[in-house]
Image (cartoon, rainbow over all chains, first blue to last red; front, side):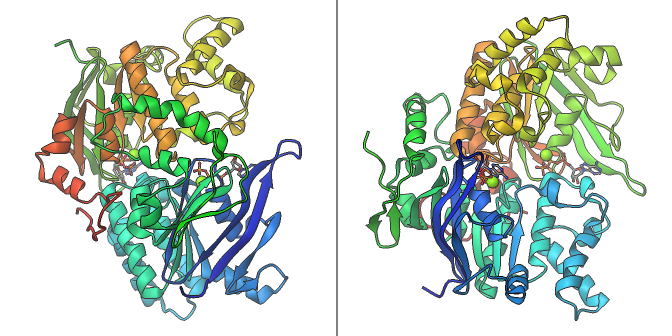
Length: 302
Length: 272
Ligand SMILES: Nc1ncnc2c1ncn2[C@@H]1O[C@H](COP(=O)(O)OP(=O)(O)OP(=O)(O)O)[C@@H](O)[C@H]1O
Ligand SMILES: Nc1ncnc2c1ncn2[C@@H]1O[C@H](COP(=O)(O)OP(=O)(O)OP(=O)(O)O)[C@@H](O)[C@H]1O
Ligand SMILES: [Mg+2]
Ligand SMILES: [Mg+2]
């Protein structure tokens, strides 16, 4: 595999009071590689966004460290930090909060172009904005003069994706970039991320609840529960031969039009959910290997 | 067949702009029967939320409903309600769980206080009575009564979502509208919530208007499904027909563009 561009090495992040700690990340380790997509899936509240915020340096690790091109970050090297900041871009989960209601869409895209591609003429910037909007399947003429509140939820999300792409980053952390998009627009965005990954050798961390799309875009996948990565490896191995009970539960809950909700088989599965949750939440420092590039945390015997 | 709970006829909605108007909902008509779970699917921007807001009479300018449009709830003309009638209509006839509902709780009030506000708005009720009723409602969505003393930030996203649904059920509405109620949740929690709604509507008899772009999920839970394309309702059919024998070419294209969980991954192109 190619060299890692970004590595999390045993990172732990704890919230809450000392007597009631919440482990949002518990000894989390993974690496992002140029030209590869790593998917992160898991329960709501398991720590996925926390991992993203650690990468964006909005949180500092309580334990462990981040490495950029093999060099530990945060040793006060201002230039390295600036370089890091312009190389790593994030697409947020919530398009409502991440767009400024007082500015037009044109402004939202023009600003990063001005900041990060200073050589462009005004006409070139204009052309770049048009291209970005077309990439995310929006009509540039119609959309550029609009304000965020005049767009539907899905349209707004497409603007924040276009904005992240505007600065030609090397790493993109996408936190549920398509959760508000319908299948067909989602498809366009996923194809776009795939193309960018291949053409620009982007390293992508794709956080999602949609496991089918993770399958579609990702090379590798991690399953997170209560701050721990409970299973990880090549995406087809993990999804076709899941080892951890939480991974299995997650896969069984993926929407499947062949199974109605009044199907009796669901009743049994529902009965086991709480038990699987309780046991998955226990700290498990050991690792077991299921095959080449396929690992998991052994589940406590019941 | 019994009279529909919701009857939408020739609904036309514009967004009024400075220069041009945008015709967001075009001549839409459909019915929802008592106890029915009706799904409304379609791509981003096709007008789903616009319809949901109009049905619950929460639409505001620049949205303008054209004359000739008709929305009837249990036979009553929703668009003609005056302010006093509207207060009785909200929550009691139609309750709506918004897109991004988990952020719609008031952050400075306890869960108990938020139940009290809704219950009190519809007739005198003591604190103790309200607490008892809230406990009962939380039980319906499988949340422990101790949570009544919590503030929203002390509850996880999935819990907040279920609490909003419980509040929406407080006054036994005839129609529950859910606009993308589970997009921010993992599939396990999503399934739990929707299965609970499915059980509840069968037990309590309310109807559901469920909006999502996840067609697979919609087929699992809906009785009938309407497919929207650019403001128009292009197909309405029972869920199994929408899945197994979609009639409209657009519905067929929607299915073809869905990524699969297992098997070979071929590149799929967007529908439009
Ligand atoms: N700033 C914070 N202060 C206190 N607790 C926090 C903070 N941020 C996150 N947490 C807690 O850390 C845990 C992980 O949260 P995080 O947002 O990372 O979850 P997530 O996996 O992204 O969930 P979702 O899928 O719902 O977005 C949760 O229990 C959350 O309540
Ligand atoms: N306040 C507004 N002013 C002008 N146009 C609007 C306004 N709100 C919505 N629109 C437009 O009306 C159309 C329908 O929007 P609506 O929010 O109903 O879509 P939706 O089907 O709910 O989409 P999504 O799946 O993205 O939530 C969109 O094209 C949108 O741009
Ligand atoms: Mg998150
Ligand atoms: Mg909407």
